[in-house]
Structure formats: structure tokens, C-alpha cells
Figure (cartoon, rainbow, N blue to C red):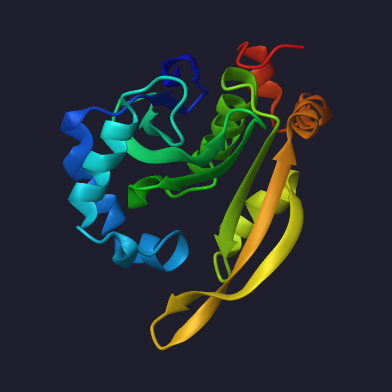
Length: 202
């Protein structure tokens, strides 16, 4: 399922047991812990959490969570991941999250394409109706990216414990119709190369 999604710079694939250490390293990364998630919530540690995700991934359809690995098209190296949580196949909704795990790839090229391929996966492969996601206050790059195509639905104030204080979660969402409109709006602009290469269809 993930293997059908490929962009100019990145491609998605199903993770395997050889990826456990890489995923665990990302989950323990201090920068990602301050901007994307809090690994202290993983009761048994990062490696066990990564293994649990792979076990949940054994089901192609029907699972409540799906994890995909993002690889560089040029090198084949794993550089990040995308995961769908709380999938409701009946209402066709899910919580979407993604990250660039390798610091060298945290550029203006890879982050936006990972977001784009995540949306393609959600709406064109999984046939979801709506996806939503949470962005921590202070993660300005992700906020700008979410606001480029998504709809801000609200803010969860003082929701995430950070050190001795609390941080906010900004909630963003996108519907399948929004994604189709987004593709058409930008097909002659920032997505011109993607359409030219046949990644998206007219």
C-alpha cells in the first residue's frame, strides 16, 4: 500500500524489522521530542514502541494505525516516517503525523514533499474523507506548512506537559475535496514538476 506512493525526492514504503533501530533513534531525538512528540509517553521505551508499531502494521487494511517509512529517492536511505493513528475506516478519518528523522534532510525540499505524499496516501490510496493533525506551539515550520493547505480547527491550550510547564496543540484538518482543490490550484506552480512527472493526474 505505501509502496505505491513516490514523489520527486521521497518515496514511502512499509517498514521492516531492519528499520527498528533507526525508528527508535528518531523517537529518542531531543529536537523531535521538543517539536513533534514526547517520547516519555512511551512506557516501555522507544525501541519497544517501534516494535509495537511494526506489529500493528501487519494488517494492510483494518488496523487503527498504519506506519510508513519515508526514504530518499536518490539514496534509498530512510529519512523519516509518516503514521496514521485513530483510523476510523467507517467514517474515513484519521490522525496524520509525519517527521523528518534525519537532521541533514530537514530542508525546504523534503519536509513539504513528505507532507504532500502523506496527503496523497490518505486521500488517493486509503480513500479517507478527512485527516487531522496536531502541531506543537513553537514548531513554526510545521505550522506554516499546515496553514499552506490545511484548515485550522482550533487550539488545545496547555495540553502537552513540557518541562515544568505546558504547551499548546494547534489542530489542523483537511478534507478530500480540499486536497483535490489544492492540487488544481498549484499544478502550474509549486506542483508543476509533480504533474509533469505523472505523480499527480490532471
